[in-house]
Length: 135
Figure 1 (cartoon, rainbow, N blue to C red):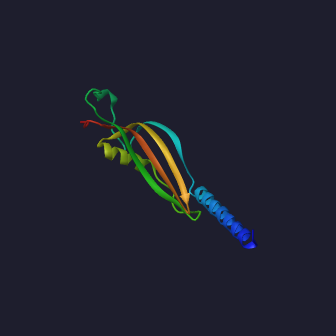
Figure 2 (figure 1 turned 90 degrees about the vertical axis):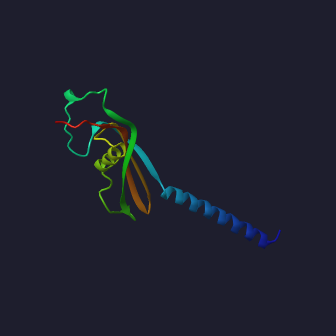
Figure 3 (figure 1 turned 30 degrees about the vertical axis):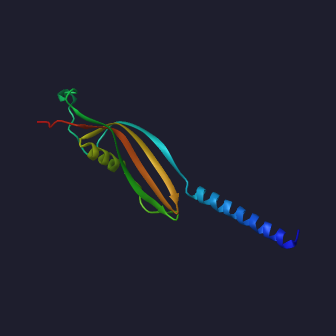
């Protein structure tokens, strides 16, 4: 076995090692997580005239399992850019999708990830109720 073959094998081994290290670093940099923030019994991004005594639960229009979200870029190269996404915008998005007035039994989650740019998303999922007009 000549010295050229040994040097070639070492070079290939080094390239494989550096490739694996670069891949591991890339995966670590593209890290993220999703966290369950809890449940809201009822949510609306604006004031809702709600008189439970006048509601007929049998006739309410309910759209189940509606989701809404709001995303914000929170940092660029580690420098903060904004305060992040807003819960009220996520709730408003869900209510608009369900064509109603309030969101009930809303599960709230946040997802954060970063790779040179930090991004955060707030997602709400629940039931949208269309309230009747109050006199």
